[in-house]
Amino acid sequence: MKWTFKTTLLALTVGTIGLIGCSDPETTAATGTDTEAATSTSTSTSDMPVQGVTDTEIILGGANDLSGPFAGFGNPAVAAANMYFDEVNAAGGVNGRKIRYIVEDHSYQVPKAVQSANKLVSRDKVFAMLMSLGTPHNLASFPIMDRANVPSIMPLTFARAMQEEGDFNRRYTAGSTYYDSIKLGMEYLIAENKVSNLCVMYIPSDYGEETNEAAKDISDNNPNVTLVQSSSHRPDETDFAGAMAKLKDAKCELIALSLTIRGAITAVGTANAMGWSDVKFIAPVTGFHPAVAAAPGGASEGLYSVSYYNDLALRANEPETKAWVEKFEKATGEEVSAGAILGYLAAKVTVDGLTAAGPDLNADTFNKGLETVSFVDGVTGSTVAITPESHVAINDIYLSQVQNGQWKTVTQLK
Image (cartoon, rainbow, N blue to C red; front, side, top):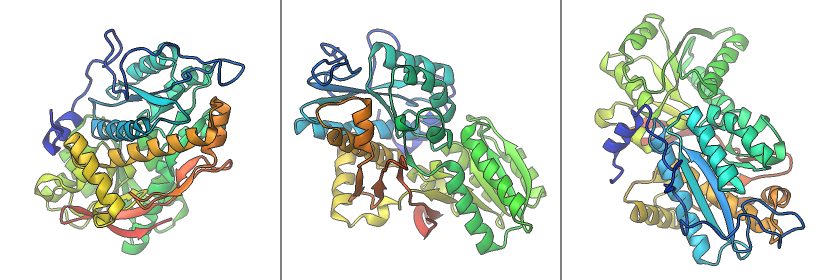
């Protein structure tokens, strides 16, 4: 089925769907053959067997949301990563090894995420986990991964715990935390618009709590700002009329939205439908999505979001950007989204790290290889730099706003 905007919104309302790929025959999103590798360990690269590495193959895994409320991120991220891996494999692979990427669908349910991680680590014997989505989902899976010395590479969550929980040398993230980025965005809008009354709508998970905590810290440290109301919401919640009426009564001037993609669209659309025009909304990095900007009827018009890069539409005339966008759209039949960009960047960083690790590949050499990754990406314009001191790939933070159905850069915050 072609993944149109309409079907994206439908998928984002799905509550829980059965786990894909946890029974035989396996259903995976993988690069290369679906048959089992001859072995999942190799004795030729070191004195000790290395899980997920053979003389000819590197097995990567991921537990993602392909059918739940964040499928609008998960599906394009996996597609873009596989597109990049296909190109690398066609050129001979990495140090003579081809990459196979096995992805399990957890439908944004923590128990299924744990089940998926256990399958990938214990049965598929993956070398590393790439782009697993969800904060509690990753945290619940880390013990399984750590017991097998399996690194976490650029998960699709920007919670602080992704950098702080467990062994630093096995944790790599794509960008600054939810807390840091949304706090910078809120502070900018507060200063520019002389905001006094701050409010939050959030999902009560690590993802949402970081936005709520950032708002609390702003209120505690700025005598001119008061956090007047925070309201928590389910990931599948779509009716915000009652909540929005209460926030309007509380005289909120700026509302931070840590909701799903559909939730953010619906929240702003509800305020617009009420005629509430003297309030501003800001979303964390998860809100920086083309589907949000292009919401039917201009439902999201005026929404702000923080991000790690400028919208690619603003780079449409850059040759490398144009070529990649055309290639992705031809391969998938879909427009480029934030998930696709993150998938492409995650795959590129992973391949660069594997290349730098050399033929003697194990978790330690991979760690050292990743810590040398540094480039200015021609597609996104992002500066990527990983060091032994910082395992955050992108440190740039931008503030954008939906204007006439497109994201327009307001300023660079960092």
